[in-house]
Amino acid sequence: MSHIILTTGTYDLIKDHVRRKKVTAQEEELLLGELKYASQVLRKNLPEDVVSIDRKVTYRDHINNEEKTILLVGPEKAKVSKNKISVLSDEGIAMIGYKEDDIIEWPAKKGNLKLEILKVEE
Image 1 (cartoon, rainbow, N blue to C red):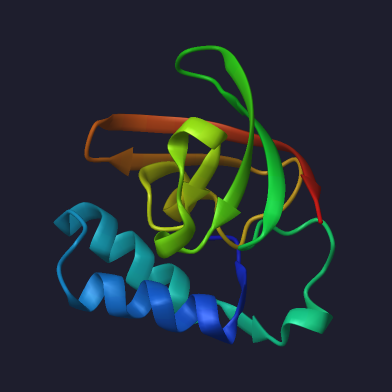
Image 2: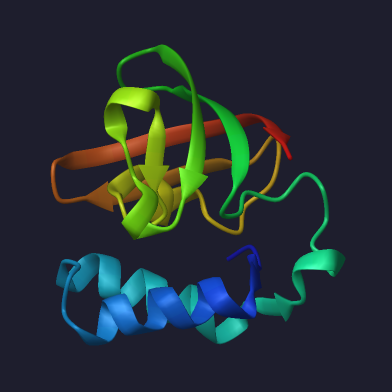
């Protein structure tokens, strides 16, 4: 399992999301495993190529063979029409903490995801 890197705020957000049973049992197991081994860093120490809130992420969806660029935001700022995607969405929760060139397979509620992170920008 690769170790994800999260800011402490994001770590707490995801932990709370899991605690409130907002994810499937399979996702819960994966997330708790990831959180257990996650590195927590201050925002200023977050490597530039790591997916985080307020970063622009370009990724390829291998299931639909689509490429998308989104801005990952906190749940209260999400606006799908403007490509502002919540960190707690299926894609957000799958990619958060991973870095450029990682490929993530994720058992989302709407079906399995296979996402490749192509580029992360501030």
